Length: 358
Image (cartoon, rainbow, N blue to C red; front, side, top):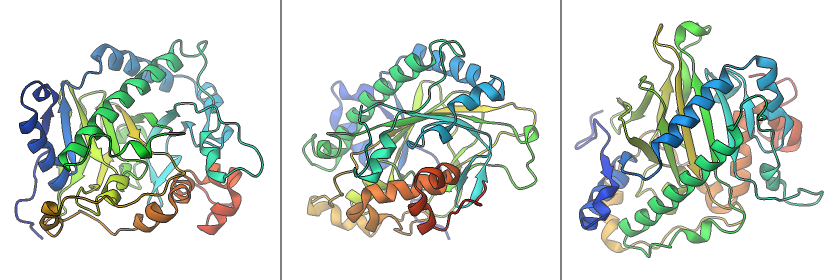
């Protein structure tokens, strides 16, 4: 099916327009948010030196012997943060051919018996030591802070594009809000058994939060966005930019006015070596269920015109009524070994048992 006025590329938003051309910027942002769900952002303010340093350290980490990387394995924490081996995450029940390290900011919460189960997501997790990769924790903690500043800046602009006060989303951030990010290595298809496909990460929408910001750390292809006709559009790396996309939380808050668009990553072709990326997830506090925003009536006509690719509304009820449970279920499905070890009852509720294998 071909959808009229569908997109065949991702728009580029230049934050330099904030200096004197804010009306034009918000107009461009509205188009990207209402009709695409993805865009590039340039002049974003995060130093390239920091991304370069983070990329070098990511490569150094992934090049370590397996037994050293395993010291930071996710299995050592209830948080689902830490290292996971090649192929140890699933999307829609299928193995993702990627190796990764997930991290987040510490909230300093000590989880005790009787506390809400979702607080386990804030548990401490094992970082690589300076002896193994010098400066790893400091660099990625710095990057997490920079990402958060940019993410909060962007979400204020999102509010303005909806003609809401710029602080309209602040209620979902404080207190006890943890942002998450990860470094990812996607090996080329000749570097693993690709007989079951080259799914770097399968088709999905980002669930955890409002926005995702992505640094594509080298020039290899892989990220693809599904337009409303079902075609896959390449999100080719562009120097000096980040890719930004809407997560399910923002789609829910806007009743679908701003779509969380389906996307995937393919492993690089043979002989091209690994693809590296560093995504950041602007997350929300988990103790406050979402409430649909009261938006200006002028936007009502757009809702019927926005066709969300691969949209089934599966998360809406959870986000509005059981936000923390939704996030836990999502993490357990993605990492069933960690989920069954620390959240056994919830894992069994969604069909995961001790014999479940990645």
